[in-house]
Length: 62
Image (tube, rainbow, N blue to C red; front, side):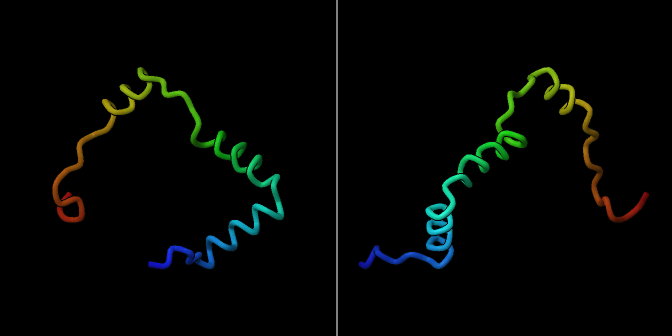
């Protein structure tokens, strides 16, 4: 088996990051805005309890 295949996307991303090493730092900063957060267990509990259960046949009936 030939494991040396590299997709066009992978090649593009590898070359992009080689040419622009500052992108990794920007990516990590942007990730911190949306993903790297501490979860507040009490807030999460209140959020889950506030959800109304979905009614069956939501597209029919009232």
